[in-house]
Image: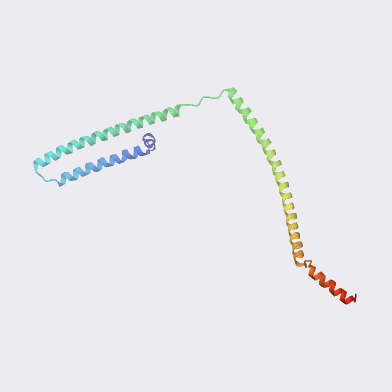
Length: 176
């Protein structure tokens, strides 16, 4: 069935399947209509004639569909057989040597890249360690700066009024 889907495409195959089902339903409906019709001979003959014509059309459509299916199946079978019979051409000695040379070159490049990767990983580890140390020093400096700011904010700010009061009190106490 997968071969038919590949041959006709999904939509076309579905349309064909649905069309076959529709034709069978139509035939069933006509047979039921025949049973429901009155049994007069003239009506029966006309209905029989009409049904024969429709049945012949259905049979020819079914035959045509069957033939198309058989042709498609045969062509797919032939194509599959031919594809299985084809043997890939053997590679020449020069092509084989060129491929081996390319593989060796790629292996040497892979080794070089591996050593570069190892060196870069070592450098990354060193840089990361230095960064962590610098970050710790920076954090310690920020903490120290915060402590200094706290001390500075807690000390009394120079006030000229207080200085004048101090000097005035000092002169009175000293008797000068």
